[in-house]
Image (cartoon, rainbow, N blue to C red; front, side):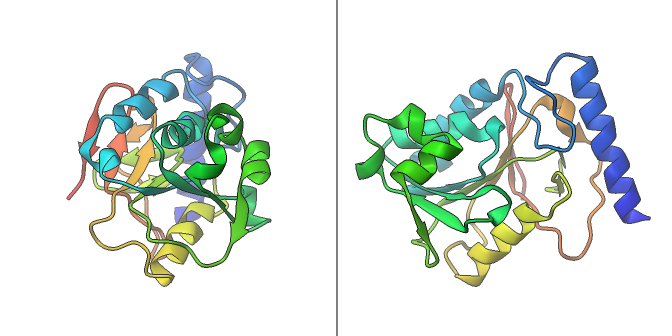
Length: 201
C-alpha cells in the first residue's frame, strides 16, 4: 500500500509540474528539472553551510547541474554518483575542473574530468534531487532507491555525520504536507527552493 501511495504522489507531482509549465522538459519517471532550479542553486550557494563546505556530494540529476557548476566555480571538490550507480562514484577535484566548470557539471563532463573512486574523502554537504519533500525531512525520489543507497554509502564509509547538511533543491510545488516513509528511507535536513531555505531539526 505504501509503495502504491508513493507512486501516486510521484504522478501527482509530475502531472502538476507539467500542467503548470514548471518542468523544463518531460519529468515523468525522473527527478524533475524545473524553472528556478538555478535560482535555488544560487540561494544554496549563499548559505553558511555551503560556504563552510570543502567537498560536496551532488546527485547527477539535471535539476542539480547548477549546484555542481557552482561547486566548481567556488573551488570545491565534488563527488557525483554515476546515473543509476552503473559506474560507481566519480570524484571531481577542483584542480582538474578549473576553467571547465560548465562542461564538468554535465554527466559526460564528469567522466571526462573526474575519476571513479571507492573510498571517499570527508563530505561536508550532500545534495540530492527529489520528486517531493516535506517539512519533516521526508524525501521522495523517482522510485529506484538510489538516493537512499547513496546516503547509506556515505554513512557506511563514515564520511558524513549527524550534523552534515543533507539538502534537496526543489520547486515550491514539490513541497508536500507529508511524504510516506519506509524504514530504509533516508531523511534530509535542509530544503532549498527558489524562494527560501528551510532547515529541519
